[in-house]
Length: 292
Image (cartoon, rainbow, N blue to C red; front, side):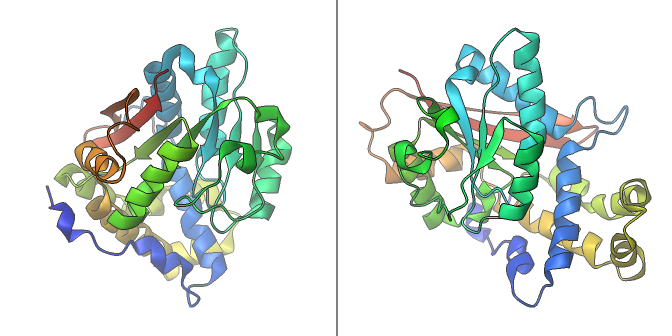
């Protein structure tokens, strides 16, 4: 494993600098979303988004319906609509009530979120900027979302927690303990060699799947085949994400470095990994919740 001290600035920062055009950022985000929702027969029994829903149901058990799931660093929506679909489908099959999801970000993507919310009654959003290091209490954050009032708060970080450096990550965890009832961190990569091998395959994968998903998008085709900026950023971002992803032990150490033991009394910290793509694509998860 690469030592955590080698954490370097996330390549995702490339996507937000002013010189990187918005329409190119959107193309890369499209590929990132595909990484969550796509499922290749034989190689992938289920999609990573479906795997997240399965882990939530398995780890939280009957508690899964106690929460509203507040997605931090939602971007343009990412995998959340697909996680919601799989999770609630399972709950409906079991005769249980649907759970709600709320999209938030320090830079709200309101137009994208509006489109998602119109298609899905279980997803809403906070139009104001929400800083994960200084989020308000549940009563304040969700005061305009009456459908979720009274529910416990579970924060989601889907392929986003590694974007925070150690200081910011510790602040995020501290704020979570103070203002929420749990958090989930989901990553599709790690600092294992297998993750770097998998990321290396993203470029040929982009060449393969682009005609299937983006045949009617000339810009996707142009920036994938003729000027392959999009697959380059996808792979480069993947390598940096691997380097920055923390182990469960490192996340727990950050948590305990910022939060006193008495405040963590009764909190359960669980983690694990599951293969999402044969032979060496693994999904890593951390779920921490207040066990009252």
